[in-house]
Length: 276
Image 1 (tube, rainbow, N blue to C red):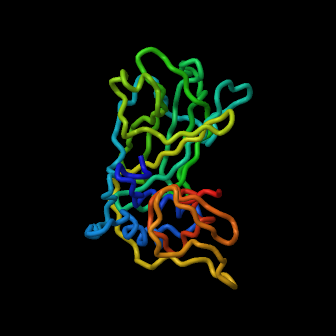
Image 2 (tube, rainbow, N blue to C red):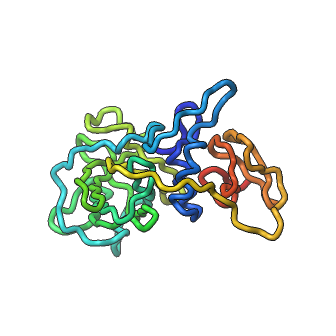
Image 3 (cartoon, rainbow, N blue to C red):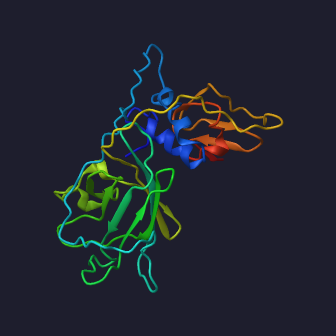
């Protein structure tokens, strides 16, 4: 899980994820993130900076492989084939190391049941592997897996950073009744899922147990413009979820509590702001 903490504070990894999605350089953004790890309240001391993801983002926990894994899956980002039946699902996110820096070239091997809860053990339907891009991002296009006896709804995945051990784990869906009875289920592996018409979109960021050296510490800068756009948004302001601002004309609603900095203007960080 990688968004707000239980106190409503945006996590370091969530801000980095938003900045990466907005196309900002990862090392530069990373070193601006610790200041936004938590939105300080009156009288609260600033947390000590550390190169690790020390805001609840522990390494992603492993889980059992189960009986249906097959090696040599095809290289593909979409598991859909001609005639595929089921609710369309996209799963996207990033793979980070212990210093909250994205990892490029990570192997992700996915496998899952079809809409009826059955695995293809003779071929490679709903099986495929891919690699994270230069920003550590991945995206899987598939369907919502079906249920079968004894298990809640889930997707299997193996991850391996270059030259590192394999992590085998599973991803889960929120608000599934069987989450309460499945003995393997782990709430730390819940995806963030939303409905989009007749399809669903899910997000999950993995943290691998990979040591990383912090990079340089430049401050993120805004894209140069001839004139600063007008509006009520201002860098240095502490915003709470639900606050509204204008920027360059349009209005925006804050999605996560944070302190604004140059480079995180509302149009650039959809994880922090949505248009009104």
